[in-house]
Length: 214
Image (cartoon, rainbow, N blue to C red; front, side, top):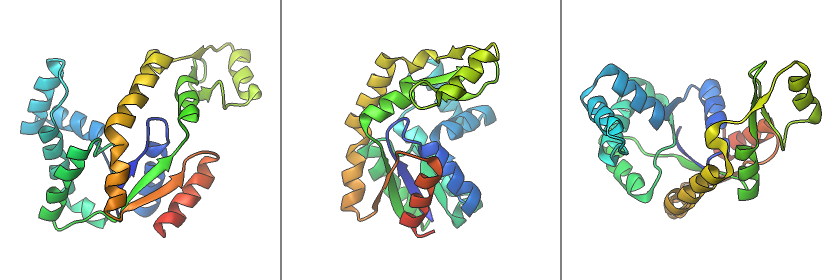
């Protein structure tokens, strides 16, 4: 099965994609991971990406697409893959189509993990890490007992610098402007499948599998 995962930051795309990958032998293709690997390997595209990053610039769409195309052409992708974090905008979605056609592949589904924006904001701004145990917690969703266990053990609840409300609000704004239009794009192509991304992680995964017929 060949899937694109859609959803705002904090919707749980990475978590659910990893479970699908582990259980069904799908390859998870993460743009960030691919870029880091290409840079580390010193490939031609990796060197171009590194030059952009070193200059403080965004890596251009054509470089990202080239790295994605190289990965999709590898043998392990023939059994199925999940694109996590790509495409991010309409242009990338359109550019992806001829790449897939060239390797004789086509998408089976675009899965939207649908989560209310207010809940996303709480998921992201409420994230904390216990300095003692390293456990990930959330001041809005973790139980009082879990939060107290950290402080009772002598730990502090640490918030990442980029989990502040202003930064998160900007990330969600960028998603709405650039990535949300993909929902209509894939709906028009007859590929969109929507899964409610709120509630218990196991229940969300069960709904995801049912929706995909797995």
